[in-house]
Image 1: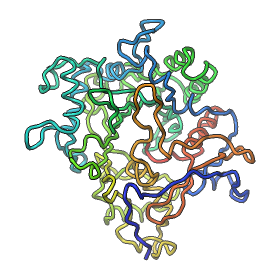
Image 2: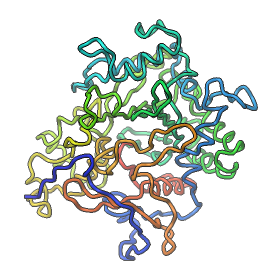
Image 3: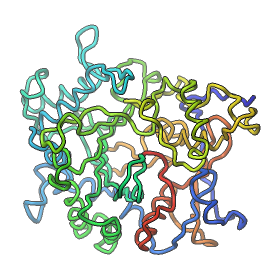
Length: 494
């Protein structure tokens, strides 16, 4: 039987940057080098055009995320008043809220963290509210009450009795992200029809003094079908020629691109006529525990659900976290059955976790506690290389685990939860190990990256070599070459 590894957050899958210039020629087969096994780095089908990660994939330049015109609701220095605050939290919420009051829209959304609830049959504990001494804790103490008070409202009250001051919103822009790599003829979650990919705004949550908390919020927008996927790819790529990233010309071009996505009406007939697909919160700051190294990290997903089809008065409601089972399903017969019935799909990364297993909150214990490591209950289901006699390989387990938010944001990538870190003004957000590796091509084979990153499999202890930014750049090149067929599978539902 295979050896079991008890891992903590600080000893989970130690990773290191490694050079890949000496990749053996005998692994250069295009198909074998796709990310399907996660044992090898993507061998990109296209070598041109060159992709600038910081200008067209993950844009985090200080001159962009601190742009005084576009990141503040009452932006200053704008050449035209129409540019004011177009990347601010307040503006984006106002366009997302439909016919609802933006203040009530936000307070209802934050209020979903303040009480325990059930999502998809699984318990989701409160991350705020009042403690046994009737004192505010979690999101209530750190975000809701301070913001209400700063807006001139009472600390407590209903969702509709306060007009929030969005110039004092405790959210700071960290990055604008191009996720056109999600585009393909078939959506990752298994639905039919075209998928143009996504654009994302990543915000950090701050305290009353503007200090960054261990919490981020991601607005994840569908790219509207008013343009083809190829057109969207060209627009992202043309940012490079607009001017140096963060320059006035560049920021203007980026604003023109994002305006098409975030404005109300971007997708007519969608809930609130908004292109928002989901909002995700990624935090450890709102855990109610008092002992820091025992706090539980949690990622939630909210969608515009509480409404009828085509309504413009929808609210953000907690939904299931895609591709991520509830932690109570780890090492259970139900998960074992899924593995046995989906061996081929797990090997090819085309598996879709069934709805009845999906959680409302991806969560894992922090520092000194054992984290969630996805594994089988019946160890004999692994193949002989893993000490069993069944059909499941270690790569299948890894593909499954990495596709979960629990694995990707924690154990399987040796990440302290945030792939894009919170920050203070004037400072650039930092990448996790999963995103930090460069996308420079190898000098010996331009289809491969010069560098990659290795992570240890949290169960088998095998090395898994990845370069996620290279994979995303490869999909950009594919689209810019007019190829509609995805070359790689996305690394989970991320």
